[in-house]
Length: 403
Image (tube, rainbow, N blue to C red; front, side):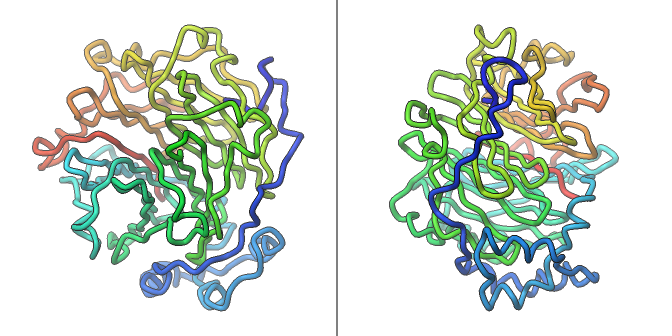
């Protein structure tokens, strides 16, 4: 799914297309309700940098409400130098509720899964089918799909509190009433934006942005329309990750092939979806059911589930080339032979790749790929780390690194 040609390392990223809809601000109803929490979190002398003002040419002039909260945004300098220390896990339980836990830097886990729905005033009326999350400095932003295909959003602040209610993202987009989604992925940028990708029920990828001031882009943008081969491709899963201000999107075609493209910082897109399987020596024999990705340094790490439930891994390097073959993660783990998985995601925590996955018994497992390329010796059972883990089963998950 590289935005390169099928010849490894040959870049197509020099050609760019503009998104069909400009990204201007639209007021988020969550913004006012969260302003007090934002002020408490970012009152540490953080100020908006001049580089964000420069983005007005791309995103439109800030609204009056945006100007009021601008001083509360973290500076780009802090965002560009942050080093994540915690792994945050968000899971969709079989009852449709969302749960959250944390793996701390020392390797211990929070003592129990926390019920996210119970933190939100409208949580008891909502049940979800998919979830993803992203760390933006020391906040966790969570996106989830309702059973009716509408996208919802909330935030866990650094002090452990949550936004008071789930916000309806479709309601922020001019075309949101016409769209319903099957799967989603999200990622945070160094400038504090939340980038959101989602698969429509027709298999098309759509994209929007939540800006640091709490406003949203005015409409979902059709990603397939930005790619020369987008008309012939339909997708079943998607995830995304940021490298600097560029958004890397990985998606699974209906035939189980992984595809990749890039949204550049100026809002243009790579000219075509790139076939990742074609970059890997064993890609012709592998087909996948789920995909996740994360950035470490300038590299994009991709994890995917084979149709047999085995986890595979590859890397897109900063120069646009790919690792020569998908690596079998189960083979790196002492208990990998006995485990098969149904969902996978990954995250960068302190420049190591943390992989979380749900097995066929709906249990969450975790492992780590270290900076030297070695792997943790075995998958760890996350449910066993939580006091209420034995009573919970999961069907979808998201993972994020948080400062």
